[in-house]
Image (cartoon, rainbow, N blue to C red; front, side, top):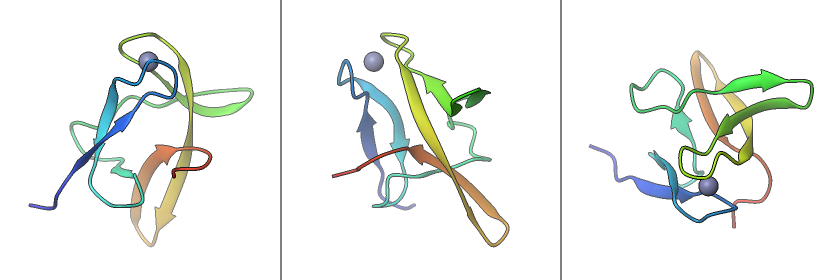
Length: 74
Ligand SMILES: [Zn+2]
């Protein structure tokens, strides 16, 4: 298994999902992948803890699809 690390909510700091790479992405087909929705501003997910709108970035590498939170990941 690949190592995972938790990605915190930018608002409440609780875990949004567990990323499987250092880039902070999660496989879009994984059962633990959060549900990503779309509105006029783009893709996002709701934090399950505080309901914050968290912008998501869609990553496509070949036939693999992943999501990660948008913006700086430092
Ligand atoms: Zn939150």
